[in-house]
Structure formats: structure tokens, C-alpha cells
Length: 371
Image 1 (tube, rainbow, N blue to C red):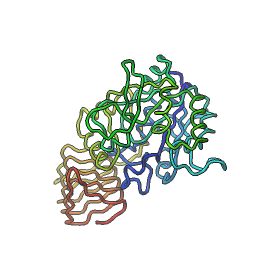
Image 2: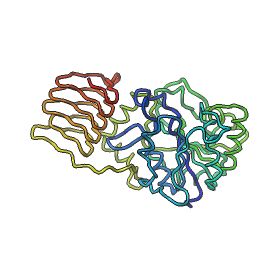
Image 3: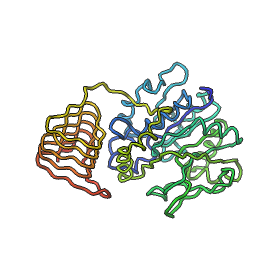
Image 4: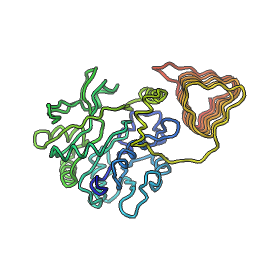
């Protein structure tokens, strides 16, 4: 694919309400995942792996953490003179109101869309974790002469199925219906990724903004199915839809499966992230670690099983951590017991404290909280 063919747009805040506990101080896109990544790493890497060299990230609020993570885009080879990485905050011009949904946000990003010079735009939400072949989706879009291509997945509907669009497709993958579903079971549903020609996209966004239509995917796309050629492109690999804290926990625990890691972190399409130099993790003489992902810079003197530990986590002697997600710089003091716990960064679990949740109802420790 020519590097100038496609430009990318990523929504950083569009679905913050899905992970309320984790997004009180950060955007959905900057939520930590998998011991060393942020959620935005997947959308950014998907675009870069397809040869996209211009990416705009639409922000709304709580984006300081996101800015710190993406920086100038060097980790994704987006520190460029032509193209590169752009953070697109609200109030980009006087005529743009603070946006309440995606059409407002896209209208506010219109200057970037005009200037990027690419023939196509690839829109990406932040709530789907997947290693998507964007290049193949664009090739399919061009080959079918599509006006819009929506990336979808066939499988078990996400828990918040009513918030997702379920697709009805013809034999040639043309989308004939898009609707919110209250049903359960398997279906073809949108992953929040779509391809569209830039000129058509600008017209659709401007018309929707003038008509005060709110959401691009849920309000605009279903209405243009009869007037435009809208096709689907199936992603058949691993997908995790982060529609609540429980699905975030499930997606994280899925990484303990070697086959899931192999599929999600495809060597041909690597998931890139900002690297942080740190010392190797130190394991004490009495430590015991089984089936866990441990980032650099940790100190383990207790027991860790079936858990994910981010950089700089400390587990003291006699402490037991099972089925947990402990984010950066969390401290678990001596003889504490944790089971089914999600601890945000810089939290402290005091000596002999017992925190136990269940696989369905996790115990959550807020950022910098001392328990």
C-alpha cells in the first residue's frame, strides 16, 4: 500500500463511560493493558503496520496521560516531516462547540482531514483490542468499489450488545442492515473500524453536523446503506471488546493463554508501544511465580499466580497475589492476600490486608489509594 493512500483517525475518548473506574483520570485510549501496553497501541500499530504515516488522535478530556504516552510518535515511526502523529483536542476553532459525540469531534478535526492529503480515511475506535490487517481491508474496499467498508467480527456478542451495531450482510459481504441488538449469542458486529474515501467522508460529516446528527457509526451509517455501497470486511482473529471492567479483566486474563498471545501479538504485524528502560525484575529466594506476565522493574518476594504485573510492582515476602491485575508501581505489603483484584497505578495494599473478589465481581483499588 502506498504510504500516502490512507490517513488514520483514532477516537481516544469516545467510549470512556464503558470503563468508568479506569477512565476517571485518563482516556479510554490510555488505559494500561497487558503489563506494558496502552489500549491505543493496538489501533496505532494496526494503522502503522498498514503503511499509514499520518494519524490524528481525537481527544476530549483527561488526555495528559495519553500525550505522555504517544509523545511525538517515535515509537510508531510517526515522528515525520511529512505526515506524522497529530493530537486533535476540542475547541480547534471558534466555530466548533465542545463535542458531545463523534460527529462533533470529526467536524472539529476537519482541518486535519483536509490537510492530510490522503485518498482514504481509516476511522478507529479505542474499545476493540485486535490485530487487524488494515491493508487487507483497504484492498478489499478498493476491489469491491465500496463507498464505505466496515470491519466486523463474527462471534459471541459483547456484554453491552445494545451499544454495538449488529450487521446483516449479503453473500458478497454488502451490508444491508445495521442495528443495535438486544439479542444474545453469535452475530456479525462492528469493531468500530471503517474505511471511507476522504472527499465523501468530509461531505457526510459536514451534512451530519449541519443536521445535528450525533454519532457517525450508530446514526449516520445505518441511514446511508441504501444510497451508498457499504461493505463489510471480516476480521477472523482474536477480538476483545472492552465494554465494561469485567470484559477488560477477561481480555487481560486471556493473555495468559499462549495461543491468544501468539494471535494478538502477530510477528508480521507487531504491536508497538513506548519503551521504558528499567532493570530486570528481581525474584527473591522465597518467591513463587506461576502462569503470569511480569513487566520489568518489579520485585517479587511472595507468591504470584495467574496474574499480570505492570512495571515497578512490589510484592513483599509472605504476600499472595492470585488472578490479579496490578498496575504500575503498585505495592503489596507483607502477608497481604489478593484474589481477583484490579489495582490501579501507585496503589498500596497494606500488610496482612485481605482483598478477595470473584471472576465476575472484581475488587477494584483506585489510583494511589492506600488500602
